[in-house]
Image 1 (cartoon, rainbow, N blue to C red):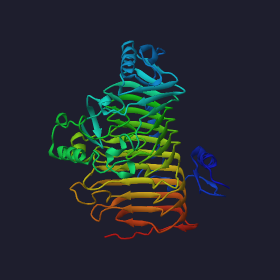
Image 2: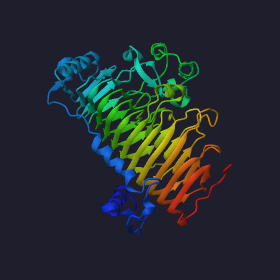
Image 3: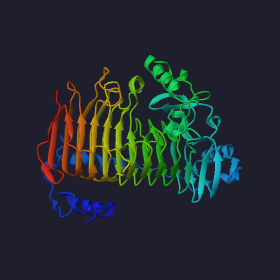
Image 4: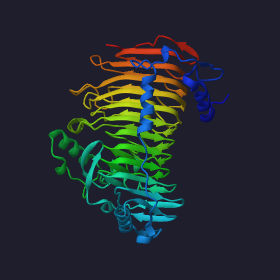
Length: 490
């Protein structure tokens, strides 16, 4: 039997119906009644995933009045050359003033600078419509309150931005085109692979300055970048917003992170196609949010498909807000680093992350689950649950949990990583099943693998400094592994 996404998920659903669990993943794997071995560590079974059901009930997308405001009625022209920035501003303002509704973008190509959403507004990008974002950095000024790589500052406006708004959405079957590429935005990363040449401007000096400001406690109002600086803007960012929806659209050629809700509540991202392989082009980065549902999305991204974050270093400790209650389901994650990444910006803490019925893998994807942090970032990662996961191929490990990511063990804030439960996972090809590594004086805690199959691997797992690692019905290369080896504990 060929294990496609469709028959894998069909088998998973059939086997788990009515409280049963999958007995194995692969040909002739019988269904099996749930037992105590299926319990996530410390939960007794159902309570862990019961919280996912609570997230589903609690997180609801916004609803909008039937009023419609065509952007073309406010002066926009879909010819790809007319600057429609003011038309978008007027249409959104009129929709908001009327009590909310839909701002319709019809078929055509609409060139614009920054679009700022207001409460009650659904920006609906219709079939055949493309919003084409300007390549002129001045089109994203004045600078706005934002985050660059998880540190607060004033910088170029994200292309679609909302601050302290509620009931907002970007929907439709159309395309958001950021026009990033080796000619625009991407060279600022300072890498020749993305078009940078010696003598061209790049972001390293600004990034160093921002980190130094955060470390010294410089007030955010004084961390002003934007004009004359080279920190790339995010694509779509909702900052301190409530009740947010991104649905149906395709995101293409982003400057940097693509969908980035920050300090927001009740966020839904569904049926979105991310098609952008530039530098730091993460697909979706919920940061310090509460209540996020990501469903039925396709991620073809230049960095992590989904990266859950909670602030970085001194700035993360100042804001100190966790990211919690995140549900990811029925997504397809194809490229490039982690399919589901947690970190590396973990300072405010990350908890209650649920991933189910997802497919992952391509010749260009590195990791399946990728938890990455260190003692400079600090914080915590706890209560992470994966089940019914099908992985075709990975370049590196299926599961990587590493406290030595980036700066290693050079800080004063050792992170807490505990209660990671992975079950009903099948990986066809990877470098190794596991790379999990805590610190000698700060081990990882309570990691459980239940009913997991790793078929083709090149090397043994690396496992070091962990307190409580459990295998139940784990096979590697066709051989059962009942006692996980622990290599390199010190």
